[in-house]
Amino acid sequence: MHGLMMDTPLLISSIVEHADINFHDREIVSVTADESLHRYTYKECFQRVRKLANALEKLGLSEGDRVATMAWNDYRHLESYYAIGGAGYVCHTINPRLFPEQIIFMINHAEDKWLMIDPMFIPLIEKIASQISDVKGFIVMGDEGSTKDTTLKNVISYEALIKDESDQFEWPLLDERAAMGLCYTSGTTGDPKGVLYNHRATILHAYALIAPDAMNLSNRDCVLPVVPLFHVNSWGSPYGAMMVGAKIVYPGPKMADGETLYNLMEEEKVTVSLGVPTVWLVLLQYAAKNNLKLNNLQRTIIGGAAVPESMIRDFHDNHDVFVQQAWGMTEMTPLGTVMSMKHGMEDLTHDEIIALQTKQGRGMFGVEMRIVDDNQAILPWDGVAFGALQVRGPWVCSDYYRLDGSADAHTGDGWFDTGDVAKIDPEGYMQITDRTKDVIKSGGEWISSIEIENTAMGHPGVAEAAVIGVAHEKWTERPILIVVKVKDASVDKQDILSFLEGKIAKWWMPDDVIFIEEIPHTATGKIKKTALREQFIDFKL
Image (cartoon, rainbow, N blue to C red):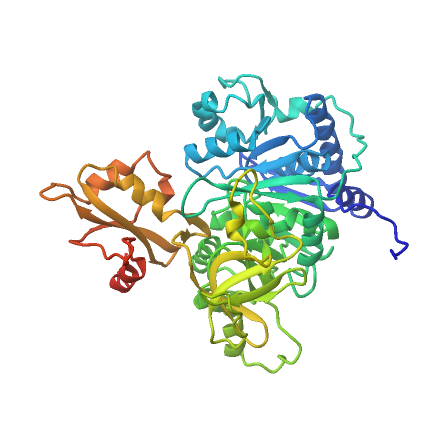
């Protein structure tokens, strides 16, 4: 017997309708590409969202078609999130920092129909336009003069596109399991893999992240998402923040500028901010250098890489800001855990609280976690045992987009293997201890060691190459390249780095090249990176 409840689908367009009625005067503030400050209300935002939805419909798009974005955090990018997904299309966010070959692969693999880009990315797209020939046209996310000198074909500015459109739009009644977002994640081997989000998962994820024991967002907050909109839904903040009617502040292209971030936080009275440790290091250094205090910020949610204890103490001791670590993955929409205190912890000492803050937090309702050993035996939550971290839930991906054989990421009993190694204490606090894959996480973003190795092996003087990550004060981790020379070859560090230039992304470039006589191998002939990490455990950049 079924219950007698209305079967109303969970759609992101419902956030538009709810927020437009209840929070119409709430503000959205953006630093734009020309570094000016743009300010408008939710009401004005949603008028433009509906204009864009009408314009996209006239482009001849069909339900499920992919529309890609390559843009920083600002109001136009936010508008595209809701217009594309709400109208029944799929918003494919692309990381502009990736190497062009990866961008080309993702656009072609996703079969993007239109590409929406910030003006500053026009030169990049012009260079690869001949290799993404299935893209029907380009929308430059700027004013009517932003397309003036481009060589791109079938191009129109964002403002010209929506200028004459109606600000009324009838949102389609979609299946809540219909796709609405697409984000690619890079692994250790092969091409990037697409994670295809649906409306239901996105709404459930937003419900979870606004809860008091998660991000604790409310209408009284002012939220500054430094985590990019091009990276896994900006951790769900566009949906959660607008669901509760929080004020939103976007730093545009100034995401890593300490002065800009500080001024925005103070002038706009930001209470909550989200980002990776690298960003906060820049902010804290700027504040310390200029003897400044963050007067309004109450808490910061930090993910993407482990947070140093020194950063947690700096935020607390010098700014009265509470640090909440969070952990998740592109495959998880992305949140899985958030650090929050439990009942009974009221009397913990400052140092005991800091110790908790160094962990990645507790699982949210909607995400089940377990750790297993090599034989898939479930390990206890005792804070000692560590094993492969596996998850499942309604916002965890079941398969990768258009990738045959993707089930290898899932166990036989329906769990997703995250590729992380973790331990969980009796109170449910999870802590990442290692990674099962050899990707390197620098500034919260993945670097593929194997891709660097394979590229380096193309040098005629390199017999064998291996890449490992070493600790870095600013970026958490940076790659170093370990090389065995071809016998009698005359090659040095600069030769190798010059060879790599233009073949891998600039921010993937190894911070050092080290020559050794022999690289250790496993019994099956694979490079034994555990031995290399042990060998270079004391290496200092």
